[in-house]
Length: 205
Ligand SMILES: Nc1nc2c(ncn2[C@@H]2O[C@H](COP(=O)(O)OP(=O)(O)OP(=O)(O)O)[C@@H](O)[C@H]2O)c(=O)[nH]1
Image (cartoon, rainbow, N blue to C red; front, side, top):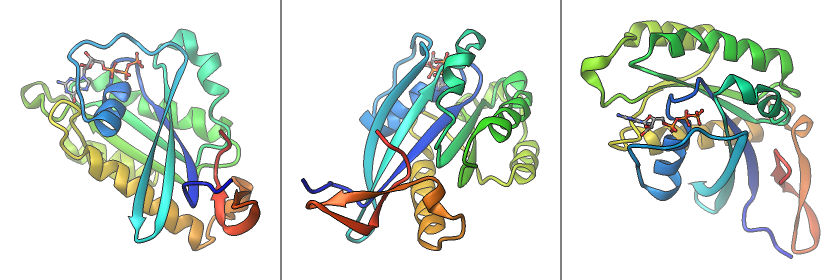
């Protein structure tokens, strides 16, 4: 049976409870936003197929983890084989920003193999009057963990597609340039019953 995509990547979302991980994904996958969302229990999963280049289909498989400490043992078990980790903090919560260092340390200690890409997102950019972290501070942190930085709003949709398209392009680039020994993350997939070199899955459903 032919696969409907050429590459597949596991993308993990990490950050404190309430920073807007679920809301970002809902905006991205369903173009919707709700003011009140319950906390994620354990880990949720969703997918979307992108076409960053003509004729190349990339399936992004998102793991939306619970930010609450009590689910940490469960969420840690999903670090494995993540091609990309998105660290999210709420621009109106200094504490969530300061905790990014802890989330980053968690991942660098536990994620095997090492993810190809990190991305730092400051969320809720629509709450301008409540802003508690400057762009410069956030950019410095992003530089220190070698990650691109963007500010997003799930409420308005600002930069949401841009952030996810960036991930798609960067992962594809890292994989096709063979810079990061992608086969450590991957297995060769199947197309029309035959193995193809092009069709790599960086995570396994
Ligand atoms: N103003 C504003 N509120 C947002 C935005 N994104 C999320 N929220 C609100 O923030 C609250 C928490 O959002 P969630 O998406 O559930 O946060 P989470 O990070 O998934 O939380 P956990 O599942 O507990 O880890 C909800 O009330 C959302 O409506 C945003 O861009 N702007």
